[in-house]
Length: 90
Picture 1 (cartoon, rainbow, N blue to C red):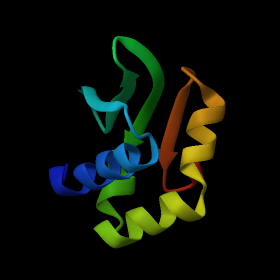
Picture 2: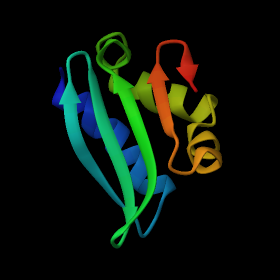
Picture 3: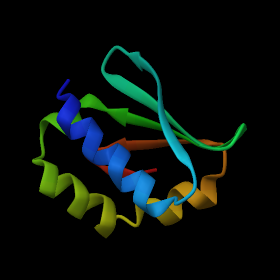
């Protein structure tokens, strides 16, 4: 997995969730779990599929997350796990 591209996702989330911490939870096979916390409180959980990172440049990753309205979908999901794949955010 390209850590630079994962960092792009983390920076996007940090910008769109100001005042929160984006943390890598753990790596599972072909995916990376992330969590967004506000202090000790868990706000959101994400699973980023490695194929999404491998198939796109850093700029494409930011563009797709923006076009897919990832921030809104993550907010709406609360603590329910959100998937980021080549098919979009769900």
